[in-house]
Amino acid sequence: MSEDLQQLVDPIAALGDVEFGDVDTSMPLLPSGMHKCRIEKIEVVDSKKVEGNKNMVVYFETLEDVIAHDSDRELKAGWKLRNYYPLQGSRDNPDWDYRENIARLIDAVDGPPAPGEKRMGFDADRMLNAEVVLRIVVSEDKESGILRNEIKSVVHPVD
Image 1: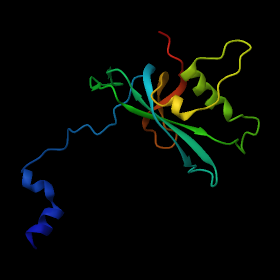
Image 2: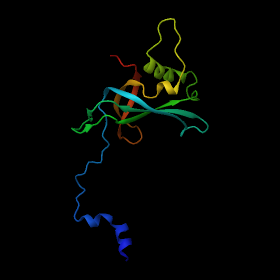
Image 3: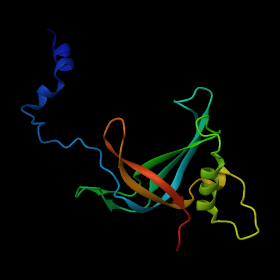
Image 4: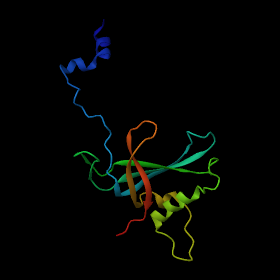
């Protein structure tokens, strides 16, 4: 067997006796609670569940260091999260208005409209880099049983 092939088959062998039994491979999670974030990026993607449907994906990053859920590990500011916003109604729930969650996102950026005033329209340029507060919970994925962070709401920061 050539030396190049041996390296491809067992690249760790060059390091000597490396123990992997105590390595923590769990994904660190933000603790449940309110977290200051900024909107880093917004894009539109095809739905993975329903052919022809579109979702808006909003990417957030945290603004403060925090101690991870069930750990003493520090998660530095810049921790990434994303939330999906459907861009059409649901066949399973025709009474649901998909615009509600997008309107809540607009309110989180601009603050809720004053009584009698109309909410501003969606403007991605205005949204980018806006600071918002995410209410995050640690929840268990129903299919895999793996813990994950779930964004429950996006609200306007209170100074």
